[in-house]
Image (cartoon, rainbow, N blue to C red; front, side):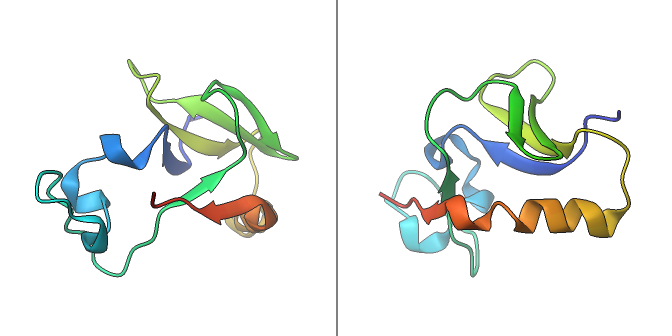
Length: 96
């Protein structure tokens, strides 16, 4: 596998400013993301492993704070998108 997928982070406060929604600007974090929201999925440790059927969390090289949600096997793009969409029931807005 190529370790590519949808980018994720342990927490939004550690993101670069352009990835933090501008409405979360605290005067220090450089928040400049336009029309963005921040979501959380699941609870617990930010560790590599299964996320749901067909998906897994993989850390980015040299980091335990950021990663990707990637397919567990080679699949067509529409299958990957379907698998990601199937996790939406567990998403909650996390902007506190």
